[in-house]
Length: 227
Image (cartoon, rainbow, N blue to C red; front, side):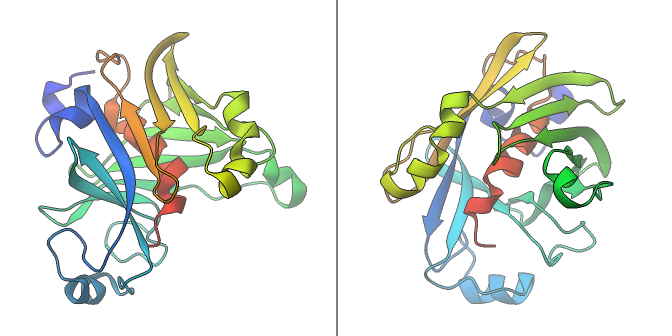
């Protein structure tokens, strides 16, 4: 996988270093007035709502959105990460319909294609299970459908999810592996009333597309965004 081909439009740290996902509650979306953003995406961006930002060295460079209403058409509705300096979707998760219904759907994988909006191409697919009744696990496939790696949630992290809601345990963690080798991680490191998650892709070394690592983070953490 050629990192050089991806550098245009992506912060270097997101490709090869460290960055964070963090919530922020305020009236403005980066430098854009809340009123202008509300008109643009058709939703309330006023006080009391959380934004989930992607930050590099403490500076917000992207924002994560659930985008249930398809505010960024023609980009498909669903979780996505958007640019701030140049507003617009960069990476979107395109959820495939589930083929199972009822209780069986609890155990069936949630399948999402990862769309690079700048290139207009699918760069991989996430097959995710668990998260509620068992630890989360994602099989990460490349653009050809071949398995590229895995993301797993340690059992202790999963077990502490409910207590975390009440006492602020910092235990939400995910590990990324390629052929059994640990190449990246995502760890909860927030203060009690703010949520922050640190991503480290510095050891991926071209083994796993960093856009797919980012997409896994978006899939797991978009729920912390109000938009």
